[in-house]
Image (cartoon, rainbow, N blue to C red; front, side, top):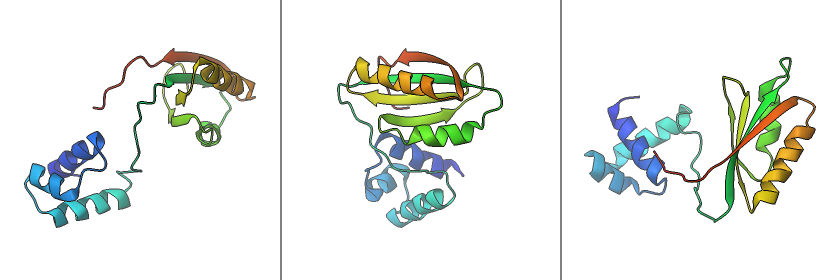
Length: 137
């Protein structure tokens, strides 16, 4: 990945729907080059998916999970990713093992997810943080 790829990624992070012609103008190359670069970034797994960020007025939170030391965090993460309200599942280093970024209609929805997570045999502790504000980097 070179500087041109980084510039293209920076634009797509802000708005994944930016037309390739507009990206090309911004980075000083052709539309075909941008298209080829994006296709290669997808093929290489650098771009995992194109997504939508919303401002729904919902409650967003991070639910941090600590799992038992003998647990396969990948398997647990895959199951958690299937929960409708979960936007992201991160496997992390540190005190906690898995972080869920969730988008719920209200605090009752967040509480329900915490309860569901605590009911999992693999989970030994949870910690929750409400997301108060969000900026795209």
